[in-house]
Length: 60
Image (cartoon, rainbow, N blue to C red):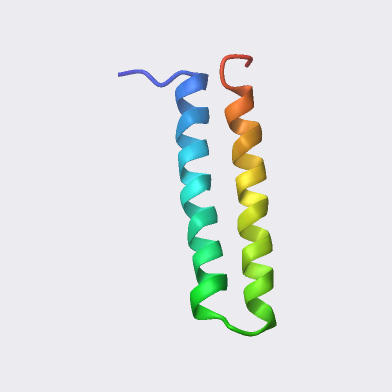
């Protein structure tokens, strides 16, 4: 099974979505102070980068 560029981008998108969800969950449930806002902001940033990776699938 060979992995081409589209498969690598699909895996990267999936991993970044999972990490983003984890960061948002940490910000929402573990840290109730100001640090939670930072975790949530970084999680949203991971979603944005995953969206770009998903948009690049098929074009690279």
